[in-house]
Length: 63
Image (cartoon, rainbow, N blue to C red; front, side, top):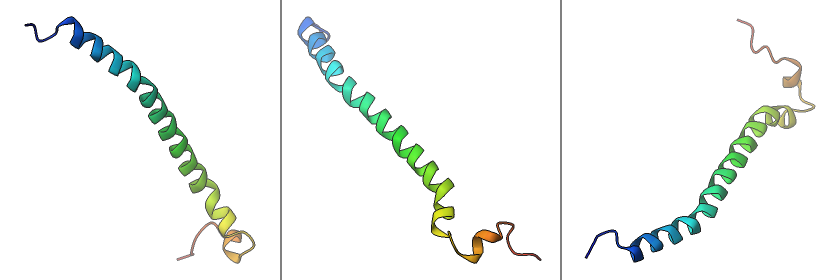
């Protein structure tokens, strides 16, 4: 009995094809999450602080 007999190889290939969709979906979802975080970090303070006095002074506190 071989460790890598034909039945094992076929089962392995079938499982690899099944997980390929999951892997592609995982990386796509990760990219969407990272882009969303970047957009929130870039736009978030402008939306949250809109109409307040803080938006007029992005230079920070003078020392």
